[in-house]
Structure formats: C-alpha cells, structure tokens
Image (cartoon, rainbow, N blue to C red):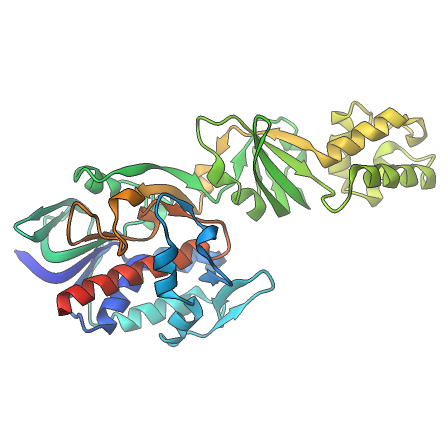
Length: 403
C-alpha cells in the first residue's frame, strides 16, 4: 500500500525535526518522518554529554568550512536562542560562549521539538533503500517493504560516523544513485592517532597548553585548551578542532606547547630558577613545581637526560634543549580515531545545491545538516547548522506548497 504525503523527511535528527517544526508552523500538516532507529532524536540526547550544546554566541559564516556558502542560511535563521524560546525552551550561555538549554538537559530540546511535531506522522525502524523521482513525485521504499510518495523530500540522514545513532553513511548511497555529487565523508571532531610510543607513558595525563598542526613545515591550524593523552592518541577539544584538517594524503604533525603564555627565554629562566632552588634534587624532582612528574619524566628522557640525575649536573645546552621541547613537543599523526568522532566532514557538494538547499538537478529534493558538505569546530556550531539548514528547507517547501 502506498502512502502519500506533502513532505517526507528522511532522518529524524536535529535538522529533520527542525525542518518539520518549521513546515508545521507555516501550516503544512501532511508530513512524515522516516527514522531508521527505534525513535527520533537519539543523537540529540547524546550531544554535549547529555546537556545539548545547541549553539554558540556570535556565530558567523567564517566559523564553517566546506563547499557550501552558509551565509544566507545562517542570516535567515538568526539567533538559536530566539528559535528555541519560540518553542518554550529558555537557554543559558557559559563562559566560553556555548549555549545550552536552561535546564542543562538535552531532553528539554527534544521534548520541545517533538511537542511541536505532534501532528506529523513518524515511522520508526524504517530504513530507506530506494529514492527516486517519477512524474513529479518522489517515491521512497523502505527495507520493510513500505512505499511512500511525496512532492517534496528532505534528506536529513546525517553523516558517515556514529552508526549507533543511525548515521553510518549508508544512506548516502541513495544520493549517489541519483548522480548527486558528494564530497567523501571523513571523521572529524575526534582524537588524533599517533604512533609515538611515549604516549603509553603519558596515558591519562591532562595538561593545559596550545597545539599546532603542521603539514611538513606548513602551519594548518592552531588551538589552545586542555590536551588529553591516551595510549594511542591525543584528545581534547583543541585536538578535535584540528581533526577536520586531517586527510589521508597529508603527512601531519602536532606540535604541543606546554607553556603557550611564555617565550622560550622565559621557560629557560624558570628552569634555572628551579635548578637554583633545588640544587641537590634530581632532575625529575626539580621540575615538580612546573609540571606533573609523569610528563617531566617523559620530556627528560626525550631530551636525553636521566630523570634521576642530580639537577646540579644539567648543562646550559641541556636546559636550552629541554625548554625547546617544552615549547615544541612533536607527535606524528597517523590518522583519526573514527569510532570516537562526533561528526563527519563531506557530503553533498555546495555546487549541487541552490540557496534553499534544494538539489538543482532534482526539484523537490532538499539536503540538510551533516549531509551537506559543511562542518565546523566544537562548541555548538554543528548543531546550529543543523537547526538553520532544517528550518531553511522546511520554510522553502512550505512556501512552495502554500503558493
């Protein structure tokens, strides 16, 4: 049996639900959401460690990378706080500019979206296997054998990572079969893997500092924040924000600066001061006032200095070399930790989409959220794009249906 709708949304995540909310608010009621998982919005509940970092203060187009120009979509959407207040969700902003629901609960966000979508029809556990246009109507078939028809379709099935949330990239095959150009999906906002054996000695360590990503001698990106060391990777928000620059064809290195607020000459001065105060102590103990012992031990060994050596025996050259390592501690990057990625880059090429996110060669088909070749750093930017792109597509479709 075929079921007919004015609008079908493939994927009940952030961009899909915001599209539905917008279309409903403009008077469109005959809407269906096809969700691969057992319920809609599961990924929303996991964002921001369950608190839903839904946006960021002072977002602009310059915060985004990719082949689609987000300027007009962002301007049309405006302020995420206003959008959610219109749904009954008040927000708060932390010191870093990250915006959360006032309750600090992702459930508040999902509840608000679902309450506004109470008139639409949800079909969960429905994996779409066929999508094609015929005689001005879009035909959709699912794995369960159901067939759905609609004049307009929004593809909001997410990116290519986080399969537990139904976004493993398999849905992109539907777009490939329509010959829609796609940029290859790759994991971003994730730890960066390194083959450095010393990571085992640094496992569990967290330090404040700055990181720089180099391709050979070319600086690609720099960030400041907390750096976390695991047995095989470097992690932390500052590392996550470097991950979007990693591709298979780039041989990159991460440079860690443990004292970003100091010049090398100032680090050297502090080392001499420590040496003078603790003249009879070991090199490892000499450094305990500057850094954690496990880190000091690794850096000393990397500098060719035995941690147990009396610090009185340190030469001027050794002190300068140690200071240089504190300022530029290198880790070769061997790839991303895909299974821990929060998002993916890639998606439908910007050249294939119009200003409303409609596919130019396929009228009535819109692409939103992570399925568009748009990505951004941590801090609510990705979700802001999901809301903005979903609202833009929902508005465009509603205006056309009502004209």
